Amino acid sequence: MQCTLSDPNLLNTLELCTTQQNTLAELAKAVGHPARVKILHILSLLEQQGGCLNADLVEHLQLAQSTVSEHLSILKKANLVKAITIGKKSCYVFNRERLNNLNTLTNTLFYNL
Image (cartoon, rainbow, N blue to C red; front, side):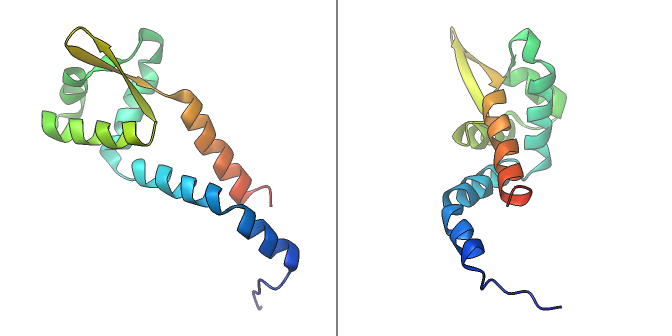
């Protein structure tokens, strides 16, 4: 069996999808660590309660505060998590819209060609 990319329609589709491919790669990198996946899971479970504080995540993850902060920074940069300032503290919330975007990108690139 030979795999070729000589079909002009397929090549055009690949060129049009470059931005989507890059976005999906960035999001995949952001969720590419078990601790970040767990943070997203915790925040999604706490979504109805309005999110949680860094200290709560540190307690649940049993990681150093600085490590949790670094993971949150990566998730915020990818716009998967939002920080809401409450006084001197930040409450972290799950960005469901961005996760839906990740799901749409995956479906577009891998299932709807």
